[in-house]
Image (cartoon, helix red, strand yellow):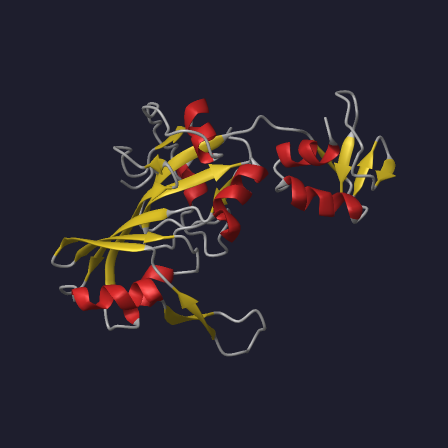
Length: 263
């Protein structure tokens, strides 16, 4: 197995990201530094990254129906609930694909497949994300064209202390579901994009639920539950055909300190 593929299988990122780890001289095989990208790994080899032994894990991809009130992060200094508290403790180390903010809910993928994560999040692949949105007051249909053309929203600057930059955010499609309910489709993935876009026109988003990511739909998976993706769904996410009927959901594990996950 090629070294970059081995590292990606160990959950260290996409193959391209793992190539950067290799060329930076951070990898050792059987105690010897390795920087050659063509290096292969044998089953008996001991591979270390930054002096930590790594092992290739089975590739896992699960779909979670994220509840409101859970952070899309692995750890929180304030000990708040995270999406990983909803998974069983013996699950391999996973990473969230994109994120949903604390007050948002719906479809969230978690995986240790770095190549799949890159395909679903990199702008060049233009993966659609579909949301159901409830506003605080009736929607003015005249705003649709403006949202499709794009509106400038603030984003945090990378330099500490610098004022927020403003970037152009746009929707791909907007469909009205009711007086104050909409279906919004994005191809961008800016932080809090939908909330900030509507805020520019004086609307507050009261509920935001992601119901589709590319060809994969949330379906009837209940809040707080998760399930593995099957081979057909994974093929569809990688650019294949429409996924078949969804697999059965799994119940979430007990939350922190033995508390059940919130519904």
